[in-house]
Image (cartoon, rainbow, N blue to C red; front, side, top):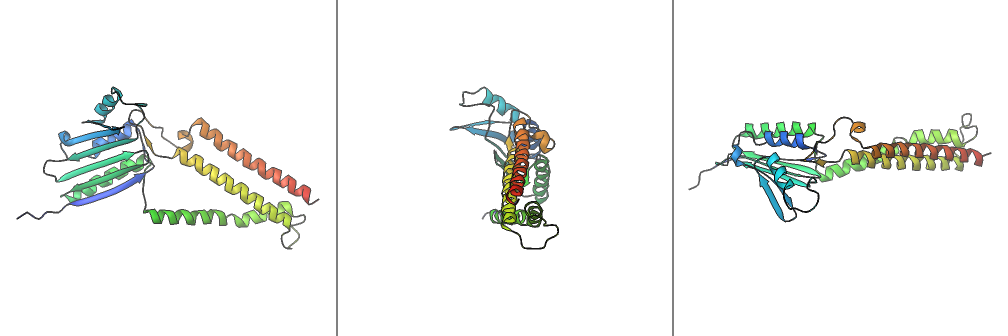
Length: 255
């Protein structure tokens, strides 16, 4: 007759983690604490071959000297597996270019939750966020988009009214077709700038996996490339130029 057992298990998925050589080294030192070093395996798969080693340094050296195809400094996956002989403590980390999956299990609930909390602090310090339930995340994004379009609506109408309607500051009449054109123009410019800026910010804040190099730290501006900075500046200038041109054309139309 088998003996009854129980284990505590915690699984968490993180996104937007920016992990370089230093962050990965700390993560792989922290995660298997309490498990013998001999029971820790760090691995990565390239093409159809899986490379394994006891430490991250040994693994990067092994891959760097291998005959694998492609750029050997570019990695798209990394994994840590650790478990003691009795199976009382287990840790599994699966990392790719989009997410980090953390699974911790053990008979000691204090150890399991403690490790999960420490790993969470480390990954959040590396820019990571806990992935929400897909349906909840989708609904939040939908509501955010609606708010972004509705909140500026009052300001847009006032600005367009003052720009495109002569004597609008003294008149309370209904907006003319020129004002409607102004509202549409400003909305197009605002939505276009929002979408363009969102793409630039998302590119800078995306997840990174760089086991052989360090990743940039600091503010968005400090971490962004010269190309991203130029793109954001160009987007702002283009949007302002578009609004000025539209305002000038609107005034000409109502003369």
